[in-house]
Image (cartoon, rainbow, N blue to C red; front, top):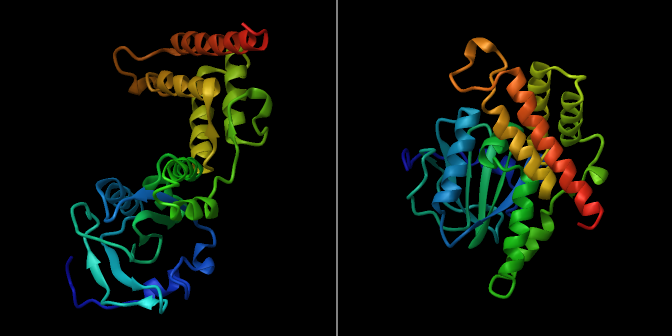
Length: 271
């Protein structure tokens, strides 16, 4: 920590309610997810904090111990480097960016709550908010006997969207559905390679920002297309040796799409 004399609890008061949890007024237009953490801040959480701060340009974080019983900050607020890995931090504790674009509330041993703007969360929770919530739910169920308190956090912050694994139940208004539609258009010749690549990348980013979760064979298909497009340059001027050209991209994507449809048909026929 640096500047231990710094004392500006107003930032924290805007983010916290009287019970020591995030204030609903602050959470407006923000998202929040629980993540596993032990008895003190660990490297995984430290990396999330640093990534979120980097994404919103925060040069430092504000940190303070909390007194939940009074709903106020107990100790002096301090400035801390965004590189918090290795610093001895125990609950109850809160860290936030100047301007409150993001915050991490560490209420008790076992979990922390990450909250913030879309930019902060996209970096701090790269897997997507819904995916992180679903993962925490599984974690809480696995530790139910030893840490029953985790279940309450999992219940309070459950996934907002279903996880899709089949074409026939995917939300037609979702960004993932746009990815699938682009696959169909590209492989049937009604969409060119560059338009497909641009549209697919845009839809993928939108899907991640919305926290959409794709599982099973459908998820594997979209992951495979992602890997294929990694080897394709939309602008030929930026193509590197070994990159796919338009014809190669179409062949690779068509093979992945056909394999997926063959697998889907085989399962429907009970094979």
